[in-house]
Image (cartoon, rainbow, N blue to C red; front, side, top):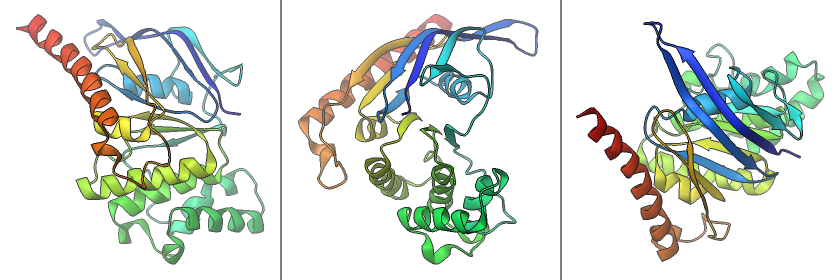
Length: 262
């Protein structure tokens, strides 16, 4: 299983001037086992803060996060995290990067190799197993990061704008690769993005957050069929209608903030 239950989550912190900042406020969100949920919203709305709380990297001021009914008390092997910056070890080969977490967990060499081979194949990098990160393109590095997370057998993948630094064509290819991986593994995915197009293309549901303090404004179910990489889903009228509705809601939040500051 891999169910996330977020209830009345609020996070506050002191900025450098000693002012109390509320990053997110009273967020409640459920991600059922095997769902792909994307979170969009204005810059600074607390998307990454929310992901970091679910990942166990920071502690909420109030509220709760449960993974399969158990409270999150810190990072754990049930959650794999993929960052925008790849976070690979430059001195390790692709294979060694993928096996790193397994080695730290005491997994025997044969099983480490078997898992690495499986996920190298899944992300199409078997021929690059002995290369180093500096020899790879941005898209290939992100495939390694995804394979490394999957090799640890997490129930949940937490992804923080993993494709934001890629060029447009590579980004679309990586979206297709991620969907293929999700359709194969059916991991629960919580995906942060600034791109409404990306959110609708990938997700079974899209959550829209307000400007700071970040609140959950609305959940949009995406009723488009999978697999999505096999036909021109972006020209489907349902895709376009949903994209416009989400875009307009996010834009309304941004405009409201600009008007308040002017």
